[in-house]
Image 1 (cartoon, helix red, strand yellow):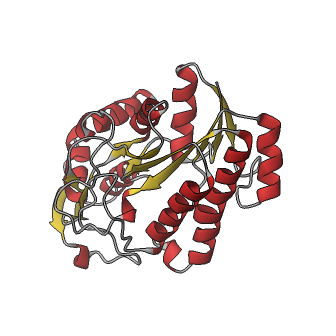
Image 2 (cartoon, rainbow, N blue to C red):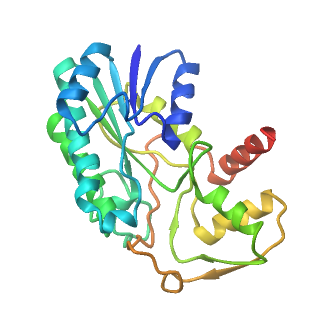
Length: 275
């Protein structure tokens, strides 16, 4: 089966492509230079030349804080780009997989979010991704919307590497402890996405199991890395950001996934093996 991956040079794409290939799929990775999703005609020509059976749409605007002041561009990529790919996938009869976010929720629910729960994004990034979800549902015949959360992986800037870097330069760190969710390793997400192919079309939640705060996440990172640092919890108000984040954005998984702490250990072990 031929699979086209947009945004293949991003953090998720760099892990998803080899995972799919290892599972017998013929993967064609496409970065922005090969396929500009915001240009319908360009994208249509490129995709019709390839004629994939599946399009995994990873190309996205992902800077949460910057999106507050750059909303037009975020919408152009996350909504209009998704709409273009959805229309083209329908025209060629391909399955479309669109990766979305926990930030489509407002965080006011005290239990994990189901894929059927009402959405209410708090920030412009979440609004743009939700607009992308709607564009896919309205324009594609065969599609999966996959919501995930708190991604980290070897192919891009992420919380794990940032914490390790900060610990090398500081004796004390404060990390937010009143936002909870599910850290998700890109390799595990790729396997989870693979696992939903063949299931009924619709919305799925795929993240590592368990729940923690950013503080709890950092604490586990330092424990696994044997880093001694004075780590203290703080509130969101003590660490203000441009974009508002949901306080509780844990997703109820649609497929079996391993615990986030086990996934984190795998990631850290892998990074150590590269040294």
